Length: 115
Length: 110
Image 1 (cartoon, one colour):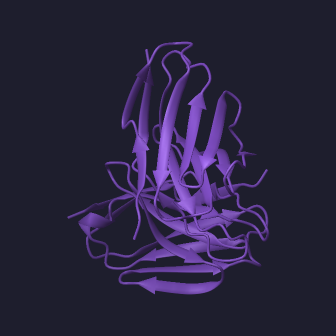
Image 2 (image 1 turned 180 degrees about the vertical axis):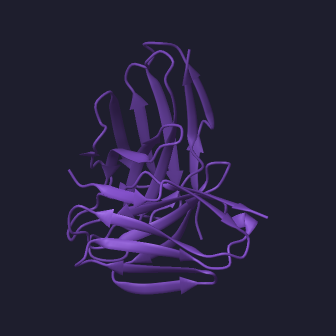
């Protein structure tokens, strides 16, 4: 088995601040994802990466940057936090072979609040 | 873009009863995944289907890729089944993008 670790668990930022969220996985999975979940809503894809140094935009990439410097880690940057923004950011990974089973495994999330 | 429509948006069941959740896709998807999110926000993968049906205990899921839908049946509902259930489409053949529906909030009461 493996685990996905997201840090920090809680993040409080100021309006306009650049904020970075980190995600580590020890599944040795190729593909990693960042999703945003607003209260009571579904998950929206921000960025994904199919291998080290690869980045693919999701439906919600504006306002975010991402970085996949190592196979095991995928970070997300909020380039300018919006006032009163509150959301949970979820990191996931999958084997991602493109032809086989791509079950997603999720981390526990980072809860963001912007003052 | 690709859309995943889940129904119902909310569901209340009494313990011991059964029901089904549905997921409709607007475009062809190679696979579907079902997740349950608990009150702490943790997402647990319930099923991954490329076709046909799968069963795990009181849960059973079916996927018809030609008819563009998937279902999740809950039999003999228990209190611990409460939570939000999400289906996710994808990835498509040769792709990696996985798109989620808006979820079904299930409350099981005594």
